[in-house]
Amino acid sequence: MSDYLDRIGSGLILLDPAPLDFDFIPEKMVGREDIQSNLAAKFHSISHPNSSANVVITGPVGSGKTLLARTFCRDIEHHLRNKRQIRSVHINCRNATTNVRVAQRIVQTLDAGHPDRGLSMGELLNSLRRLLRSNERHLIIVLDEVDHLLRKSGNDLIYQLLRIDEDQEGTGTISLILISQEQVLDVLENAVISRFGHTNHLPIPSYDYEGLLAITRQRAEASLNPQSWNEEILKLIATSAAPSGDARQVIELLNGAVEHAESDGRSLLEPEHVQTRAKSIPQVMPEDVLDELTGHPMLVLLGICRRLRKTEFMTSKDVESMYAVVCEEYEVKPRSHTTVWKYLKIIEGLSIIDTRVDTVGDGRGRTTHISMPHALPMDVAGRIEGRVIKKLNRL
Image (cartoon, rainbow, N blue to C red; front, side, top):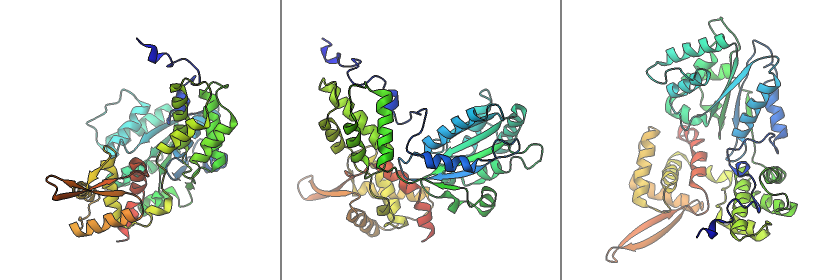
């Protein structure tokens, strides 16, 4: 009865699925050696007892920002274990968008039994000072997708963290790594920038072909039967993902090719397995396409992306309701129905969305259905959220 399950766990190709997960952290980061050296240079004084460092890491979707920070924190803790006790905490601000929630997670990293509610920001910061000094450790705080925190709660927490040693009872207890798709130093207050430093910006470009090939090879070596693939297959995967420069795309292509091959009962990856999967993955649109949009068209598109994360199509009425919600979030007044329709036509003209007019009811009614077949709504939304504040400030 269960013959159809025989291929699962057979080991024809897949030996370990973990390296094909987007969140997998390899022993060594490949394709980013120069960037790693630049990040290490920003932290050149961290081995000294009273020193700290701050950096903003920016780059497009799939450029390795999060993995860069995670591998650096892991490696620096090990590298300086005999000189300075270092600990790190990584917080995704998409999931923790308030200052208090972020501060709670930082404190609970140092003290798992610390109360997780009912404390003010001042009380949380005092707890953090006490824990840092009693443990005599240096804490590297990574705030990933920090633009979400800045948009909702401002930069007061970052300012307070930068001032945490101001009472002179301790120095150099915290370093900060901020991660965003856009240069968030542009939206920080001058008081924060003066402490953070204008030069502490580490931009990361999209991966080139060689970097994507190195990632594909690393994941294949770690997860697949060595007899199941060859270098030409890896090159095909890297070539397919090269237009986007997105590391996640090569991982998805490799994983999809494995699924396809094993479902066919094959023990060797063939070009057809990669090509079939590549056709089903929407391409990441070029970076300059979104820059064609001004603030409010970006808000319209952000509303579209958020709805299309959960459904394949939406109507023009859905667009207006989502746009109104996004305008409220960004504290701006929505534009008129006619203007929103003009924005839709602009977005469609850039080939970001497709529209189709369908007849409904008794044949006399018509409605416009909107889809995004050429890009991933989640990725587009993330890129918009990283730059829309700057666009709105130009209005």
